[in-house]
Length: 192
Image: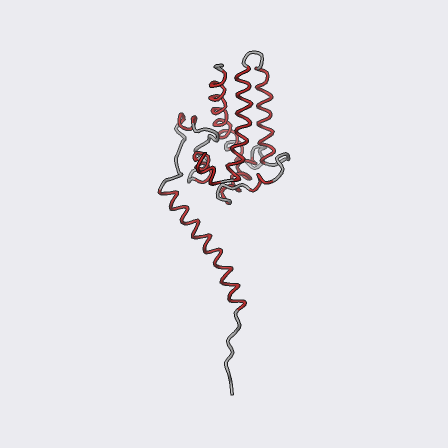
């Protein structure tokens, strides 16, 4: 049974290490297999206010979501070799891989849910430093490694959200004003 807490800790450490050194380290180079994370996922999340439209497509494919599933499946297959000596650890690893995909996908389909239930992951994408807050499922290793940087609920977040709302209001008002001006009848002057 010790395999359960050890598995949870190992999974959290693994997501921290992979996110920081593989997805953000190797993934910064556009030619890297891992570039999907930084160049597709982070770009879409930042533009969409945490929402990543790519999670609306089929999960299997040669894109960020498909590569994420491929990686999680590969880890699950690799850890299966430990089944004879650590079945609880292996089952916890399976659970952790499934849970990672489940909560990560939901967080990018429902940003307000993410902000409330996974603020550390919301902070990773929407905070001022996208090279902090590496954990997705639980913030344990960010806290342990000193990389947890809160953003949700701060004055900075409130100011950023107010600016974003003002930009949205200006953008939606501009087409309305242009449409109203285009449909307005020119005033005619009466002449004798």
